Amino acid sequence: MNEKEDFINQLLQLVKQPLVPGENPPVITDELIQDLNESVDLNDALAKANLYGLGEYVNQWAISQDIQPTANLDIAIQQAILGQSPDQYIGVSPDQVIMYGGQKTTVGEIGDNFYQYGDQNVFVNLTPEEIRDIQADLINAGLLGANVGRPFRPGVWDIRYEGEAMKLLMGQANAQGVGKAEKGWQNMMQLFLDNPIATPQEVQTNIYPDYAAISNSINGMFERELNRKPNEYEKKLLANQYLGDVEKQYQASIPKADQPITPDTLEDYGNHSNIEDVESREDIDPNARLFQTFDSITQKEQERLGRNVDIQATNKLIIDSITSIPT
Image 1 (tube, rainbow, N blue to C red):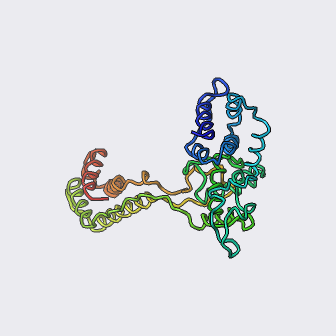
Image 2 (spheres, one colour):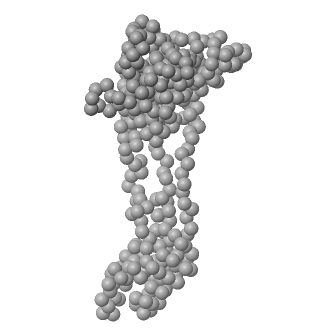
Image 3 (cartoon, rainbow, N blue to C red):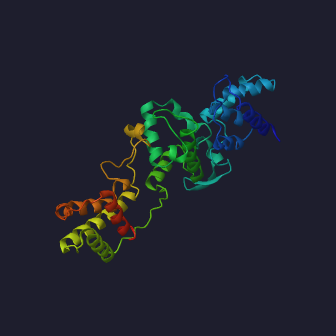
């Protein structure tokens, strides 16, 4: 095990204990651990740990190793933040072959133009309004938000979440040979926005009931409750209503596409439904609505026949006759 791996293992042990009694220790994600493990060397790992907000634990580690966390560490951190280390390109190695300006070359040959570790977090110095603009694009590109494991606070750049999303864009830009001069991460962002990856949705296929089967059930309902067959208009009214409600219920079950997020709607993202004034599937019960219509159009006849109709019992009989029809 080398010094970088020793540091990572010892750091992970240290962060299990809160610095202040009673406080929760920092959250260590698998993504963070992977990023640390991918560090080029010890200095790179030290710098990344500081960028992730673990500076106090780094200091504890340094003291335990009889190292004063001053000059060399500070330099390493600044290099990581400013992207000055020539061997720490995001997502690629210096010998990554690329086509640049029509010529075959490597990332390292044009080093200053390509993104290095730390570049993904220079955005912390932007204004909240500028950060919100980028956050909205990251959400619409499917790279930010709780649904992809990267929660956010509007107007705040978090190196664990916004930083990781930006690192993905910069890494892809480096691999494509599209650097800072070519607005690499912006081009990759636009590529994601133009080619969104849809979240798979399982929508159950609707099996519509047969009109003849509904008619037969309605016939039986009238004969049982009123000792007669339904008039043609009554049968048509109830059957058409039932089929229409089945269609409404199915349409309400289909996931609706979210509206694009804007910088002004970040606070609402994920906290409300974008579907307004539309009945939900639970609001639409074809069987119950059929009973209500039946009761409405036959109420006077029921009174004339002197029937004391138990509404709940009648409702159950009607639903039992209909639920045998696939919906």
